[in-house]
Length: 207
Image (cartoon, rainbow, N blue to C red; front, side, top):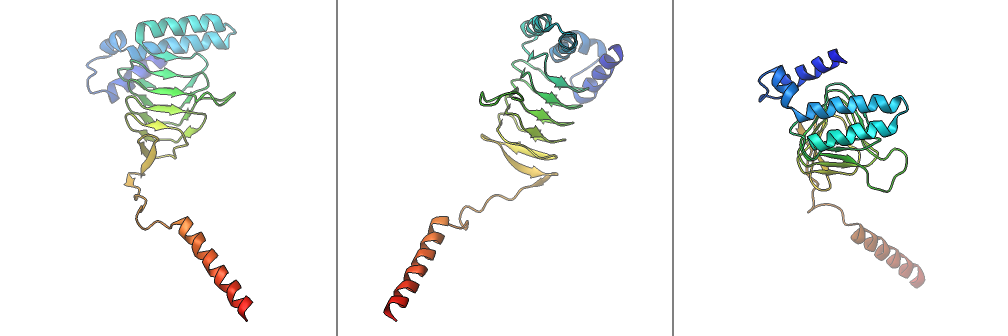
């Protein structure tokens, strides 16, 4: 546990240019405090003490403004930067070395049972205020832009923006925009088929 704490402090120092020392991170970073509390609450849950686990998680929410359900599964190196308003649901799975900014929700839509919350791969970054809602996967190294609302799976190495979110980059290369001018018109295509068939029937009747 102590070694894991050292590793997470080192990762925060590496990723946050505002971090001046390990002592400062340990004493003042609410995201780290929330993760420490989560790991304790998760261990209580695994030992068959769900009520105590929820008490720990809700107490941490009171002091940090970050709510992590004890049932979530979180890998090593989670960095919650600033953190106020972050919510991580019960069936969320988070891989290694992910970064979440303030106001992020990893939640459900209310339509699913069982697995209700998203799965984040390794090295995923979720920007401030983004909402990732539903039991789908966000692939390794993906980036979710600030304010995005993600409702469907995001592939690895993709960047997603908007409401609802759409992929705008893959492997650092911009995805071409859909040509809204020259896109085929399905209604016009069907009318053309019907017109062709009517002419064929008329020709057959007149012959």
